[in-house]
Length: 190
Image (cartoon, rainbow, N blue to C red; front, side, top):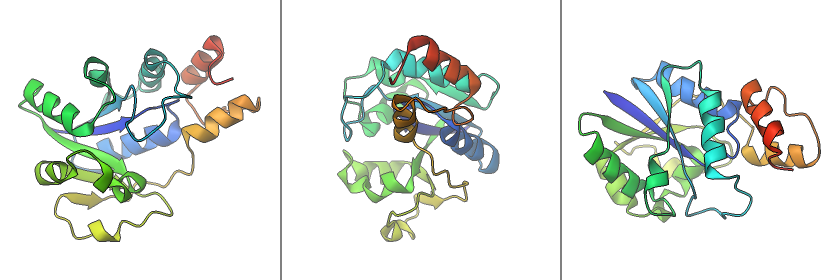
């Protein structure tokens, strides 16, 4: 069974993340997609991150009605910061019957050479890439492990949502209603 792994801080999760996950689960040969909530991305600053358990709960609330999408807290149990190759090694040992495929944006692909053991990722895993404007991925276009998808381009980011919340602007429709209710109840990102 092919399982897509969509890693992210999900700070907070928004409709762009959900559209990407649903596209991958519905329009590719993946049977399911796991949203892997990362406690800390080694290439990003930790400041500004909501509590990892709040981010996990928001992800769970967001996918309640999507049986083909699951949420994983696997990186909560691993050393931090989380490196994708270490998580994949752990998952491969824990679920030897699953074939894991990485899901990443063109922005991440453009910086892949900065990732720990990126050559091992390319040798051992297939990578499905969703488009992001403004990133040069031409060096990867002929790579046998990389599949570029026609996922709809979403010009929305968690940074945009956090900024809107700080400025007391409405984020209705940018995040699922349950996530908005959770953010408001916890007073997140103010």
